[in-house]
Structure formats: C-alpha cells, structure tokens
Image 1: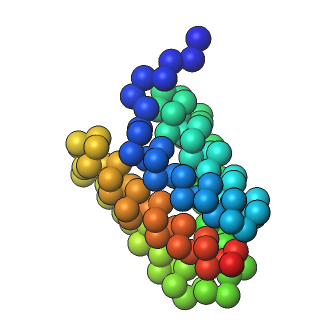
Image 2: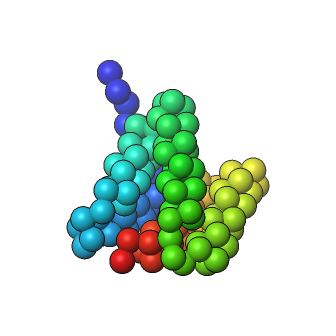
Length: 120
C-alpha cells in the first residue's frame, strides 16, 4: 500500500507553474517536469527511486534547455544558481516548510522563467 505521508504541499503548489506553461504552449517538456514534480513531491517523499528519477529528468531537461535556448546566457546563470541553491538548502535548511519555500522561490520559479524563454 502506498502511503502519502509528509506530502510537500508548498512544492506541490509551486510545480503547477509548469502545468500552466504546458497548457499555454502545448510543449512536452513542461508537462514532463510537472508530472515528475507531482510524483516526487507526493510519492517521492517516501520513495528515493522516484526522487532520483525526478533529479535525473530535471538535470537532462536543464542541459537540453541550456543547449537549445536562444536565451543561453541567462539560462546558464539560472541553472547554476538553481544547482547551488538545491545543494545548499538540503545541507543547511532543517525546517521543512522553509526548505520548500526556498525550493519554490529559488528553483521552481527561476527554472520556469528559463523554460518559458525556451518555449515561447
């Protein structure tokens, strides 16, 4: 039986930015990020395989967007910033709600801006 304890609700709300990008531009990549994010922030809380899968999909997506976008300089800056925040927040931020707020404001939102500039 799959347990849905400790769902990361703030992250789950923040990932909906990618659903909006998918609905507006009908691009597969934001849908992929959205579905993986929903799985990761619900079922992945108790399943490391889902978390690792989500990380792999996100890294591949980030690399792809960095290569293909016409907004390369800013996308690279956002990507490096997001990577640094991702590593640091899990090392130093103990409070789960604060961790989620940092994740949404410093990872979901900046990457969605880069994604928007790629698919528009």
